[in-house]
Image (tube, rainbow, N blue to C red):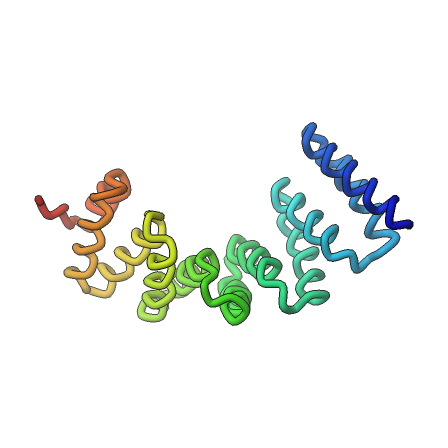
Length: 190
């Protein structure tokens, strides 16, 4: 396949997606991969489209292929970890998220993902550090704060959980309300 043909297939895949034709886009990307099985951009695009379509096992196979081809591709490792986490393969997910963090220590989504898998495997003390770092990198996102508060509460650190609840109340009252219902803590009146 010539460079022009590759370019044309990429454009046709993009147009197909624009018009909601995922299978057509996958066929165009498949043409590229048939000619060049190591085309990282197409491997990533196919993996992403499979994930979006709910074809998680196929998506995972493409991200496995991509990390083998590009072991320093943080986003490929992240996507792989996300898919593993969805399959409740938390050990595999944690390994992927840790690789992302080796490559990019400021990757807030990998920190959050690592925290979730640590929580799922009941390694609550270990979950605190990545969740705290996530909240520093994403201070206005309620997700990291919520999970951190739940961990602190489960560990018996009620004062820490209370501080987080009060903090959440200032910018995300619905999440604070959910945390109140789940923990029995109450927002401190200001």
